[in-house]
Structure formats: C-alpha cells, structure tokens
Length: 217
Image (tube, rainbow, N blue to C red; front, side, top):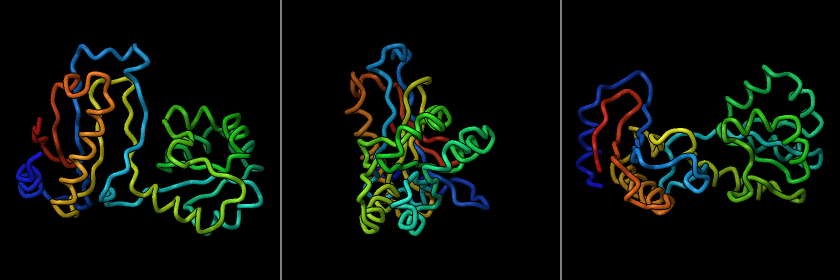
C-alpha cells in the first residue's frame, strides 16, 4: 500500500468531534462461498503498531485469581457470579456488548460456556486459547498484566456471513508510517488466510469512521 493514500485520507477527511478509527474494508469476490466451512473464520490480528485506542477486556476467574484480576482487567466476573448473570438476559447481553475481548481462567470455561456462551459466541467473543485468552489457575499478576498488554494490540476479524468486512487498523491520531505498517500487515494476514489468497479479493478500501472510502486494491 502507498502511504500517499493514507496521507490523502487524513488530509481530505472532515474532522469530527471524536477520534475516528481508520479501517480497511475488504470486499471478497461474489464467487467466494460462505457455505463452505473452510471459507469462514473468526480470528484476531495482532497489529504491529497497536490499534491506537484501548481494548476493553473482561476476565472470568475463580476465587484464587479474583483479587489479582481486579487489579489488571477492566471488568471481572467471578465463577460464582456466572449463573446469576447468565439468567439475567439483559445484563448478559449488555456485558457481552460492552467489552471487546473476554479472557477466562481455564477452570471457569465449563461454567462460562453453560451460562454465558450463547451471549458471547454470537458476538465472536468466547475466550480463545489460541490467543492466550484462556489461562491457568496459577497465573501471577505479572502474567495477567502481560496478557492484558498484549491483547491491547489485537483486532477481531470475522468472515462468516458477509463477503464484505472491515478491519480496524488504528486511529486518525496515529503516525502515517504506523498506519501504513498496520495496514500492510493486516492485508497480508488476510491474503494468507483466505483459501484462494489474493485471488479471492475483489477490492480493498481504506476509510475513517465517517469519511469516504479510498480504494487501495
């Protein structure tokens, strides 16, 4: 990707009263068959320069890690609270919507799935061991903090229902070179992840939250 496109996007886009997200919009070809399981995925991309804004992270833990978790994460649910939350449909939905990433102590995963699984899974937010989102009972505070810091760079990408999807790669306040590095990394990640690679992509655009889109591919 050429940095000129990013410079033009930031220069020509109207300023808003909030910090806008910079996003890649990827359009897959109409022949991309989402009925095939191998063509569907939900993954997290670790942006090399971070996403320029805070990821809110909720943790589900047992009593042995409750105190440590409360010092690190933005919201903590204890194992004993899961049943009550799960039985309160409105509250469960609010929590699932509010936090971007959920992590869990391994010993809570059965109860988490039982009581909150349907609320998190529909949003693609069930803790995924692949990204370190499920951790052992003996984690230390330093290990929890390292996990929290690492997940601040993650963005979620879901290709399941639509052949058009977006990937946040930063904010308008970030340096052009950092946005460029994130954009190239994210795009290459997707190209390598798609079964047909670049041949599966019809077009790629870059835009701000409330701006016009600029084509880059």
